[in-house]
Length: 609
Image 1 (tube, rainbow, N blue to C red):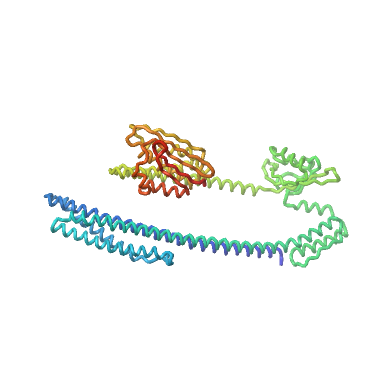
Image 2 (spheres, rainbow, N blue to C red; image 1 turned 120 degrees about the vertical axis):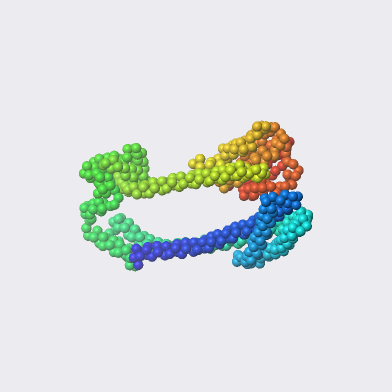
């Protein structure tokens, strides 16, 4: 089999293995991805349905209460059209809310068990959902009958307030609402079970892909080894024969059993040996070989004066070969590199290169080359130098394009961080507009807290946009800017709050910087909210230390300290829930205690990523 056929067949087999492995990897990965997308859609639909059901149930209670209030006004003599309209509207909205809740509940109860949960270890979750759904249907049926009975009672005897306060509202709060919350929890457990199953499948798929890839690699390696043997053995015989022939043994012949180019080469070699044994090779024949080389070949004397060149030198550098005779070879090298290359070659004549340098053409154009060299010795005296230069212009152009592509990617990444920051700024602005339109003080506080959290995340992306390194963010500058922004938000002319920041020079990846920023935001906001109540001045300290592969962040103040009821509501508030969740995300631990003398100490420790 011919060498070209061997190589082509080998390449085709390797390409086929790569195609099979890639196709299988794509199919398995795409299957997992599609199931994950489907699961995400189902999860969002279920949670949205439960949320809408909760809203409808609360609307029925609120508008029933409004109905009773307006009815009381009417009984007291207020016969205005607005009161009558409010009564009708409240009853209609309440009834519609009950009907919509009933429809959503029926649709929810008809959901089929997903295939991914049809195993014994997960059927208990589905059974719990079915049980809670049945309980919710029964409880809602009773609640619905109570509401409708209230309307009848209010029209006839005006005892609706008593029934609402003693029966309906307690039943809603103590029975219906807990069932809905438990049902939501059960659905969350169901989602986690599904995701766990998908994770197991993904890991199995990854192992299979690795196994198939390893098998394909082994097959390709074996094939390469066989091809290697089919080439190296004949080459070894040819090399040995050439060495013996070069040593003067013109009787040496090569015998190969193959029917490829090596056999043809061996035959040619044998013919050459026959011819050598009959006559010497002519000088013109050797010169033709030199002139036909695709690389630039230059022969110089011991001082570097050019004695012989091939046509490639003229083709690449546009010099007339006759004009370069007896000129110094070093003048072909670019001026700023000339002396250093000359020193390398003259001091390491046995090294042979290659040396990467630049030739200068007749018209001043730069031609990058890889220069190899050797010396021909007659005894201990250096007689000549032989230089072979390979044009690497295409390689240099490819390197330039790769560098340019990398720069474009860095610009794109910076633009992404910039746009994320701008989008978060838009969200923050929308929250600010909502604050303007909200008159409820509690709602305003919630919106302000959310706005500060979003601003803390936006600040991370802003810092990444401002740096040349998109992988890490300098935390010291970030902490100073974040604390300054929070202090401005809680600025009170009647209070003087001093800030101390003690931070080591620490960098974090974006994966750790975002949860860290939210943790710092929550802790500092809590200081401004609770630490200095009924006080005109105070101070707090932010400390950030890195030691033994972990980072310790602490926020301490000299305020009023933790109240007893606050210690017992650890996971009730949104802020504490966020602290708990973010600490777990950082794989760390936190503690919230009174300070050693006064005030409060919040400390979190997490490993360096």
